[in-house]
Image (cartoon, rainbow, N blue to C red; front, side, top):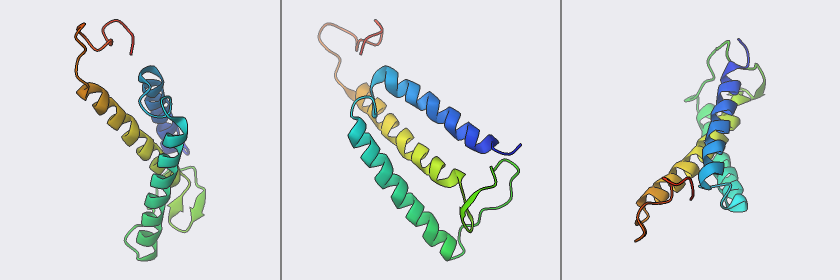
Length: 117
């Protein structure tokens, strides 16, 4: 089924964004900083991929799950979308880890029990 891989990435990104929105872990806490970090990370990994493609280390492979659009030889449309998702996921996971490491306030609890942040 063409497009299933891209759909899975986008659905996963929506789930991560929902967590981010609820707990304000990355984009919902600092949108400009998050956008810059995702853009820089995506560009870095995309350059990494292009070097790997040029040296013959990375190949696309055949899958009926791809949309079928190639941005360059051996570079499917899904790759930069996945890389952006990976960077965003890392930022949200880091924000979540930071949130868990915060000391508990003297009043008891982190606010998560009461539905607040």
